[in-house]
Length: 182
Image (cartoon, rainbow, N blue to C red):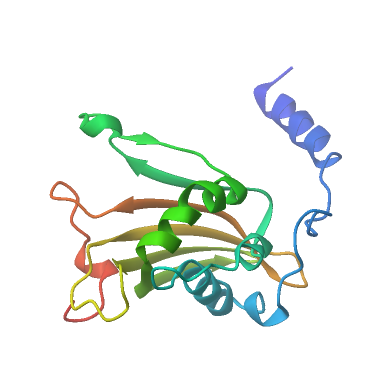
């Protein structure tokens, strides 16, 4: 059997297992305004994780933005080593692991620039961000790029994955991903 024929059979068999993308029974329903467009869902993502110290986040709203099986993947150098690695977590794990720290210390992440590509019902956004402990902080303590993959199921937008890397000396943010003059 040729490789092309085998690949066709594998893809066809996999299609039979596909299911619609509605929220699972455990997943909260999304506010329709949060998921009506690419701009709306990305705005909701930044809004829901941001707040001053002592301000509780709406983790149900956060979870409502993600399709079942979605992933969040920070990239970094574990232990300060030379090799980069990716850590894969779920939206629930993010809320559990990062939530307490965001709420205790304050965290405001804002998008400063975005490059979006769309094809049919899928989209990819390279969303450049700045992070501050308080919205009034004059300078960010970090910035980087969120690579956000999205899908529209015909009724709403879903976050499929977020893959991010903070800016560093060996990988400054290129000018094409910064606002004009940024």
